[in-house]
Length: 397
Image 1 (tube, rainbow, N blue to C red):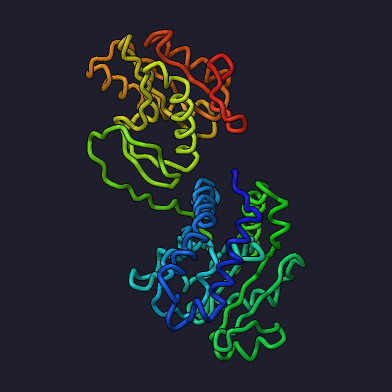
Image 2 (cartoon, rainbow, N blue to C red):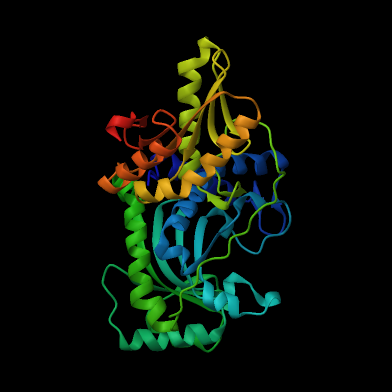
Protein backbone atom coordinates (compact mmCIF):
# COMPACT_ATOMS: atom_id res chain seq x y z
CA UNK A 1 0.00 0.00 0.00
CA UNK A 2 1.46 3.39 -1.04
CA UNK A 3 1.14 5.29 2.24
CA UNK A 4 4.08 7.25 3.57
CA UNK A 5 4.48 10.19 5.92
CA UNK A 6 6.87 12.98 4.95
CA UNK A 7 8.79 15.71 6.73
CA UNK A 8 6.13 18.17 5.57
CA UNK A 9 3.39 16.12 7.31
CA UNK A 10 5.19 16.36 10.65
CA UNK A 11 5.96 20.06 10.11
CA UNK A 12 2.24 20.72 9.60
CA UNK A 13 1.41 19.01 12.89
CA UNK A 14 4.16 20.96 14.67
CA UNK A 15 2.65 24.21 13.40
CA UNK A 16 -0.75 23.14 14.74
CA UNK A 17 0.84 22.28 18.08
CA UNK A 18 2.48 25.72 18.17
CA UNK A 19 -0.87 27.43 17.53
CA UNK A 20 -2.69 25.34 20.12
CA UNK A 21 0.00 26.02 22.76
CA UNK A 22 -0.15 29.78 22.20
CA UNK A 23 -2.73 31.33 24.52
CA UNK A 24 -3.01 34.27 22.16
CA UNK A 25 -4.47 31.97 19.49
CA UNK A 26 -6.14 29.18 21.46
CA UNK A 27 -7.72 28.74 24.90
CA UNK A 28 -9.31 25.55 26.17
CA UNK A 29 -12.44 27.20 27.47
CA UNK A 30 -12.92 29.47 24.43
CA UNK A 31 -11.37 27.71 21.43
CA UNK A 32 -9.60 29.63 18.66
CA UNK A 33 -9.27 33.40 18.86
CA UNK A 34 -10.68 33.95 15.36
CA UNK A 35 -12.35 32.10 12.45
CA UNK A 36 -9.22 32.70 10.33
CA UNK A 37 -7.05 30.94 12.93
CA UNK A 38 -9.45 28.01 13.02
CA UNK A 39 -9.36 27.84 9.20
CA UNK A 40 -5.55 27.89 9.26
CA UNK A 41 -5.46 24.85 11.54
CA UNK A 42 -8.05 23.10 9.38
CA UNK A 43 -5.95 23.65 6.23
CA UNK A 44 -2.82 22.40 7.98
CA UNK A 45 -4.61 19.24 9.11
CA UNK A 46 -6.25 18.37 5.82
CA UNK A 47 -3.35 16.76 3.85
CA UNK A 48 -2.27 14.63 6.81
CA UNK A 49 -5.86 13.73 7.64
CA UNK A 50 -6.36 12.55 4.05
CA UNK A 51 -3.45 10.12 4.45
CA UNK A 52 -4.94 8.78 7.67
CA UNK A 53 -8.25 8.22 5.88
CA UNK A 54 -6.36 6.29 3.19
CA UNK A 55 -4.69 4.24 5.93
CA UNK A 56 -8.09 3.42 7.41
CA UNK A 57 -9.39 2.26 4.02
CA UNK A 58 -6.28 0.14 3.43
CA UNK A 59 -6.74 -1.57 6.82
CA UNK A 60 -10.39 -2.26 5.99
CA UNK A 61 -9.17 -4.16 2.91
CA UNK A 62 -7.05 -6.43 5.12
CA UNK A 63 -9.12 -9.52 5.97
CA UNK A 64 -7.35 -9.84 9.33
CA UNK A 65 -8.74 -6.50 10.46
CA UNK A 66 -12.17 -6.26 8.86
CA UNK A 67 -13.27 -9.57 10.41
CA UNK A 68 -12.14 -8.55 13.90
CA UNK A 69 -12.43 -4.82 14.39
CA UNK A 70 -14.68 -1.87 13.93
CA UNK A 71 -12.27 0.71 12.49
CA UNK A 72 -12.98 4.35 13.22
CA UNK A 73 -11.01 7.58 13.40
CA UNK A 74 -10.98 10.91 15.15
CA UNK A 75 -12.35 13.90 13.28
CA UNK A 76 -10.07 16.92 13.75
CA UNK A 77 -12.17 18.98 11.31
CA UNK A 78 -14.75 19.42 14.08
CA UNK A 79 -12.36 21.55 16.11
CA UNK A 80 -14.39 24.70 16.78
CA UNK A 81 -14.65 27.79 18.95
CA UNK A 82 -16.78 25.90 21.45
CA UNK A 83 -15.15 24.98 24.78
CA UNK A 84 -12.84 21.97 24.57
CA UNK A 85 -11.93 19.57 27.32
CA UNK A 86 -8.36 19.03 26.10
CA UNK A 87 -5.98 19.55 23.20
CA UNK A 88 -6.12 15.96 21.95
CA UNK A 89 -7.61 17.12 18.66
CA UNK A 90 -4.21 18.39 17.61
CA UNK A 91 -3.47 14.69 17.04
CA UNK A 92 -4.88 12.40 14.38
CA UNK A 93 -5.52 8.74 15.15
CA UNK A 94 -7.31 5.59 14.06
CA UNK A 95 -8.93 3.28 16.60
CA UNK A 96 -9.57 -0.40 16.04
CA UNK A 97 -12.35 -1.36 18.44
CA UNK A 98 -13.28 -5.00 18.86
CA UNK A 99 -16.52 -5.71 16.97
CA UNK A 100 -17.84 -8.47 19.18
CA UNK A 101 -17.62 -6.49 22.40
CA UNK A 102 -18.95 -3.41 20.61
CA UNK A 103 -21.97 -5.34 19.30
CA UNK A 104 -22.85 -6.59 22.80
CA UNK A 105 -23.25 -3.09 24.20
CA UNK A 106 -26.56 -1.31 24.41
CA UNK A 107 -26.91 1.19 21.53
CA UNK A 108 -27.13 4.13 23.92
CA UNK A 109 -23.85 3.09 25.56
CA UNK A 110 -21.84 2.49 22.38
CA UNK A 111 -19.12 4.96 23.12
CA UNK A 112 -15.90 3.63 21.59
CA UNK A 113 -13.81 5.25 24.33
CA UNK A 114 -15.39 2.89 26.88
CA UNK A 115 -13.72 -0.13 25.27
CA UNK A 116 -10.11 -1.31 25.04
CA UNK A 117 -8.67 -0.06 21.73
CA UNK A 118 -5.79 -0.67 19.41
CA UNK A 119 -4.73 2.72 18.08
CA UNK A 120 -2.53 4.27 15.42
CA UNK A 121 -1.66 7.84 16.30
CA UNK A 122 0.20 10.40 14.18
CA UNK A 123 1.67 13.15 16.35
CA UNK A 124 3.92 16.18 15.74
CA UNK A 125 7.18 14.37 16.63
CA UNK A 126 6.34 10.68 16.32
CA UNK A 127 4.07 7.91 15.12
CA UNK A 128 2.56 5.59 17.73
CA UNK A 129 2.32 2.50 15.55
CA UNK A 130 0.10 0.50 17.88
CA UNK A 131 -1.14 0.45 21.45
CA UNK A 132 -3.60 -1.30 23.71
CA UNK A 133 -5.03 1.84 25.25
CA UNK A 134 -7.58 2.09 28.03
CA UNK A 135 -8.37 5.76 28.30
CA UNK A 136 -8.89 7.38 31.68
CA UNK A 137 -12.41 7.52 33.14
CA UNK A 138 -14.06 6.83 29.76
CA UNK A 139 -13.07 3.17 29.73
CA UNK A 140 -14.88 0.74 32.02
CA UNK A 141 -12.67 0.03 35.02
CA UNK A 142 -13.10 -3.73 34.62
CA UNK A 143 -10.98 -3.66 31.44
CA UNK A 144 -8.11 -1.80 33.09
CA UNK A 145 -8.15 -4.22 36.02
CA UNK A 146 -8.00 -7.20 33.62
CA UNK A 147 -5.19 -5.59 31.73
CA UNK A 148 -3.10 -4.85 34.83
CA UNK A 149 -3.61 -8.39 36.13
CA UNK A 150 -2.54 -9.76 32.76
CA UNK A 151 0.64 -7.64 32.67
CA UNK A 152 1.69 -8.94 36.10
CA UNK A 153 1.92 -12.46 34.66
CA UNK A 154 3.37 -11.70 31.23
CA UNK A 155 6.72 -10.26 30.22
CA UNK A 156 6.63 -7.19 28.00
CA UNK A 157 8.91 -7.05 24.92
CA UNK A 158 11.48 -4.27 25.38
CA UNK A 159 10.43 -2.49 22.17
CA UNK A 160 7.13 -1.66 23.89
CA UNK A 161 6.64 0.46 26.98
CA UNK A 162 3.81 0.90 29.44
CA UNK A 163 2.44 4.42 29.81
CA UNK A 164 0.12 5.54 32.61
CA UNK A 165 -1.70 8.85 32.49
CA UNK A 166 -3.35 10.54 35.46
CA UNK A 167 -6.25 12.49 34.01
CA UNK A 168 -6.88 14.50 37.18
CA UNK A 169 -3.35 15.96 37.12
CA UNK A 170 -3.06 15.63 33.32
CA UNK A 171 0.39 14.10 33.45
CA UNK A 172 2.14 10.77 33.02
CA UNK A 173 2.73 8.64 36.08
CA UNK A 174 5.72 6.29 36.65
CA UNK A 175 4.80 2.60 36.79
CA UNK A 176 6.03 2.52 40.39
CA UNK A 177 3.24 4.97 41.38
CA UNK A 178 0.44 3.05 39.65
CA UNK A 179 -1.18 2.15 42.98
CA UNK A 180 -1.83 5.84 43.69
CA UNK A 181 -3.90 6.41 40.55
CA UNK A 182 -5.39 2.91 40.49
CA UNK A 183 -7.50 3.68 43.51
CA UNK A 184 -8.77 6.91 41.94
CA UNK A 185 -9.83 5.05 38.78
CA UNK A 186 -9.38 8.17 36.64
CA UNK A 187 -6.32 7.07 34.71
CA UNK A 188 -5.36 5.70 31.32
CA UNK A 189 -2.94 2.86 30.64
CA UNK A 190 -1.52 1.37 27.48
CA UNK A 191 1.22 -0.64 25.77
CA UNK A 192 2.95 1.74 23.38
CA UNK A 193 5.28 1.29 20.39
CA UNK A 194 6.73 4.58 19.14
CA UNK A 195 8.75 5.59 16.09
CA UNK A 196 10.19 9.10 15.93
CA UNK A 197 9.50 11.31 12.92
CA UNK A 198 12.90 10.73 11.26
CA UNK A 199 12.49 6.96 11.49
CA UNK A 200 9.00 7.14 9.97
CA UNK A 201 10.21 9.36 7.11
CA UNK A 202 13.11 6.98 6.42
CA UNK A 203 10.78 3.95 6.30
CA UNK A 204 8.69 5.60 3.56
CA UNK A 205 6.06 3.24 2.12
CA UNK A 206 7.32 0.41 4.36
CA UNK A 207 5.55 2.09 7.28
CA UNK A 208 2.26 0.48 6.21
CA UNK A 209 3.66 -3.06 6.56
CA UNK A 210 5.12 -2.10 9.97
CA UNK A 211 1.69 -0.84 11.10
CA UNK A 212 -0.05 -4.03 9.96
CA UNK A 213 2.54 -6.27 11.61
CA UNK A 214 2.55 -4.40 14.92
CA UNK A 215 -1.23 -4.36 15.28
CA UNK A 216 -1.33 -8.11 14.65
CA UNK A 217 1.35 -8.68 17.31
CA UNK A 218 -0.46 -6.49 19.84
CA UNK A 219 -3.77 -8.19 19.10
CA UNK A 220 -2.49 -11.76 19.32
CA UNK A 221 -0.25 -11.29 22.36
CA UNK A 222 -2.22 -8.84 24.47
CA UNK A 223 -5.58 -7.68 23.19
CA UNK A 224 -7.16 -11.07 22.39
CA UNK A 225 -5.41 -12.96 25.20
CA UNK A 226 -6.27 -10.47 27.91
CA UNK A 227 -9.86 -9.68 26.97
CA UNK A 228 -10.81 -13.07 25.48
CA UNK A 229 -12.07 -11.75 22.15
CA UNK A 230 -12.26 -15.09 20.35
CA UNK A 231 -15.21 -14.87 17.95
CA UNK A 232 -14.78 -13.43 14.48
CA UNK A 233 -17.54 -11.61 12.64
CA UNK A 234 -17.50 -9.79 9.35
CA UNK A 235 -18.29 -6.11 9.59
CA UNK A 236 -21.70 -4.90 8.56
CA UNK A 237 -21.80 -3.17 5.21
CA UNK A 238 -23.87 -0.04 4.88
CA UNK A 239 -25.04 0.67 1.37
CA UNK A 240 -26.18 4.06 0.21
CA UNK A 241 -29.26 4.21 -1.99
CA UNK A 242 -28.84 4.85 -5.72
CA UNK A 243 -31.20 5.71 -8.55
CA UNK A 244 -31.64 3.00 -11.14
CA UNK A 245 -29.82 5.17 -13.70
CA UNK A 246 -27.18 7.82 -13.38
CA UNK A 247 -25.24 10.12 -15.68
CA UNK A 248 -21.50 10.23 -16.31
CA UNK A 249 -19.58 12.16 -13.67
CA UNK A 250 -16.29 13.94 -12.98
CA UNK A 251 -13.31 12.28 -11.31
CA UNK A 252 -13.65 10.75 -7.85
CA UNK A 253 -12.39 11.97 -4.54
CA UNK A 254 -10.31 9.08 -3.20
CA UNK A 255 -12.69 8.05 -0.43
CA UNK A 256 -14.38 4.83 0.60
CA UNK A 257 -18.04 4.40 -0.32
CA UNK A 258 -20.59 1.76 -1.32
CA UNK A 259 -22.32 1.44 -4.65
CA UNK A 260 -24.85 -0.86 -6.20
CA UNK A 261 -24.80 -2.30 -9.75
CA UNK A 262 -26.16 -5.71 -10.59
CA UNK A 263 -24.82 -6.72 -7.18
CA UNK A 264 -24.05 -4.59 -4.13
CA UNK A 265 -20.33 -4.12 -3.75
CA UNK A 266 -17.72 -2.15 -1.88
CA UNK A 267 -15.79 0.47 -3.84
CA UNK A 268 -12.33 0.86 -2.31
CA UNK A 269 -9.62 3.46 -2.45
CA UNK A 270 -7.55 1.16 -4.70
CA UNK A 271 -10.46 0.61 -7.10
CA UNK A 272 -11.11 4.33 -7.47
CA UNK A 273 -7.41 5.09 -7.83
CA UNK A 274 -7.26 2.76 -10.87
CA UNK A 275 -10.45 4.31 -12.26
CA UNK A 276 -8.99 7.79 -12.00
CA UNK A 277 -5.75 6.68 -13.66
CA UNK A 278 -7.51 5.00 -16.60
CA UNK A 279 -9.85 7.97 -16.96
CA UNK A 280 -6.85 10.32 -17.30
CA UNK A 281 -4.95 7.89 -19.54
CA UNK A 282 -7.79 7.46 -22.05
CA UNK A 283 -8.65 11.17 -21.99
CA UNK A 284 -5.06 12.08 -22.87
CA UNK A 285 -4.82 9.34 -25.51
CA UNK A 286 -8.08 10.09 -27.31
CA UNK A 287 -8.63 13.77 -26.48
CA UNK A 288 -7.91 15.04 -30.01
CA UNK A 289 -9.73 12.24 -31.84
CA UNK A 290 -13.28 12.89 -30.62
CA UNK A 291 -13.50 9.59 -28.71
CA UNK A 292 -15.44 10.06 -25.45
CA UNK A 293 -14.20 8.67 -22.12
CA UNK A 294 -17.00 8.20 -19.58
CA UNK A 295 -16.64 7.44 -15.85
CA UNK A 296 -19.49 5.60 -14.05
CA UNK A 297 -21.92 6.02 -16.96
CA UNK A 298 -24.77 3.65 -15.97
CA UNK A 299 -22.39 2.09 -13.37
CA UNK A 300 -19.71 1.11 -15.93
CA UNK A 301 -16.28 1.79 -14.39
CA UNK A 302 -14.80 3.16 -17.64
CA UNK A 303 -16.56 3.49 -20.99
CA UNK A 304 -14.98 4.49 -24.32
CA UNK A 305 -17.42 5.69 -26.98
CA UNK A 306 -16.27 5.50 -30.63
CA UNK A 307 -19.22 7.34 -32.13
CA UNK A 308 -17.87 7.28 -35.69
CA UNK A 309 -18.05 3.48 -35.79
CA UNK A 310 -20.99 3.22 -33.35
CA UNK A 311 -18.92 1.07 -30.96
CA UNK A 312 -18.00 1.09 -27.26
CA UNK A 313 -15.48 -0.57 -24.96
CA UNK A 314 -16.67 -1.26 -21.41
CA UNK A 315 -14.07 -1.70 -18.66
CA UNK A 316 -14.92 -3.35 -15.33
CA UNK A 317 -12.18 -3.03 -12.65
CA UNK A 318 -11.72 -5.79 -10.06
CA UNK A 319 -9.22 -5.80 -7.19
CA UNK A 320 -9.66 -9.44 -6.10
CA UNK A 321 -6.55 -11.44 -5.20
CA UNK A 322 -6.46 -13.58 -8.39
CA UNK A 323 -7.34 -13.26 -12.06
CA UNK A 324 -9.92 -16.06 -11.88
CA UNK A 325 -11.79 -14.30 -9.06
CA UNK A 326 -11.77 -11.03 -11.00
CA UNK A 327 -13.24 -12.86 -13.99
CA UNK A 328 -15.92 -14.66 -12.00
CA UNK A 329 -16.97 -11.54 -10.10
CA UNK A 330 -16.88 -9.18 -13.07
CA UNK A 331 -18.30 -11.21 -15.94
CA UNK A 332 -21.96 -11.01 -14.91
CA UNK A 333 -21.74 -7.24 -14.51
CA UNK A 334 -20.09 -6.80 -17.90
CA UNK A 335 -22.67 -8.95 -19.69
CA UNK A 336 -25.44 -6.87 -18.17
CA UNK A 337 -23.72 -3.60 -19.11
CA UNK A 338 -23.32 -4.96 -22.64
CA UNK A 339 -27.05 -5.70 -22.79
CA UNK A 340 -27.91 -2.17 -21.59
CA UNK A 341 -25.68 -0.60 -24.24
CA UNK A 342 -27.10 -2.78 -27.04
CA UNK A 343 -30.53 -1.53 -26.03
CA UNK A 344 -29.20 2.00 -26.47
CA UNK A 345 -28.25 1.23 -30.07
CA UNK A 346 -24.53 0.60 -29.92
CA UNK A 347 -23.62 -1.96 -32.62
CA UNK A 348 -20.15 -3.15 -31.55
CA UNK A 349 -19.48 -3.71 -27.84
CA UNK A 350 -16.17 -4.94 -26.39
CA UNK A 351 -16.09 -6.16 -22.79
CA UNK A 352 -12.87 -5.88 -20.73
CA UNK A 353 -12.15 -6.98 -17.16
CA UNK A 354 -9.21 -5.17 -15.57
CA UNK A 355 -7.44 -6.98 -12.71
CA UNK A 356 -4.21 -6.72 -10.74
CA UNK A 357 -2.92 -10.27 -11.29
CA UNK A 358 -1.77 -12.11 -14.41
CA UNK A 359 -3.84 -15.02 -15.66
CA UNK A 360 -3.11 -18.59 -14.64
CA UNK A 361 -3.68 -21.51 -17.06
CA UNK A 362 -7.13 -21.96 -15.52
CA UNK A 363 -7.98 -18.31 -16.05
CA UNK A 364 -6.81 -18.39 -19.68
CA UNK A 365 -8.99 -21.45 -20.36
CA UNK A 366 -11.94 -19.68 -18.79
CA UNK A 367 -11.39 -16.55 -20.92
CA UNK A 368 -11.14 -18.66 -24.08
CA UNK A 369 -14.37 -20.47 -23.23
CA UNK A 370 -16.16 -17.10 -22.89
CA UNK A 371 -14.74 -15.97 -26.22
CA UNK A 372 -16.22 -19.07 -27.86
CA UNK A 373 -19.65 -18.13 -26.49
CA UNK A 374 -19.74 -14.39 -27.21
CA UNK A 375 -17.08 -13.84 -29.87
CA UNK A 376 -13.28 -13.94 -30.00
CA UNK A 377 -12.79 -10.18 -30.25
CA UNK A 378 -15.58 -9.14 -27.89
CA UNK A 379 -14.12 -10.13 -24.53
CA UNK A 380 -10.70 -9.91 -22.89
CA UNK A 381 -8.85 -9.65 -19.57
CA UNK A 382 -6.12 -7.04 -19.02
CA UNK A 383 -3.76 -6.45 -16.08
CA UNK A 384 -3.23 -3.05 -14.49
CA UNK A 385 0.39 -2.89 -13.33
CA UNK A 386 0.28 -0.90 -10.05
CA UNK A 387 4.05 -0.25 -9.91
CA UNK A 388 4.39 0.99 -13.50
CA UNK A 389 0.85 2.43 -13.52
CA UNK A 390 0.11 1.06 -16.98
CA UNK A 391 -2.62 -1.11 -18.47
CA UNK A 392 -0.92 -4.15 -20.01
CA UNK A 393 -2.16 -5.53 -23.36
CA UNK A 394 -4.08 -8.80 -23.36
CA UNK A 395 -1.09 -10.86 -24.56
CA UNK A 396 0.99 -9.73 -21.56
CA UNK A 397 -1.81 -10.30 -19.07
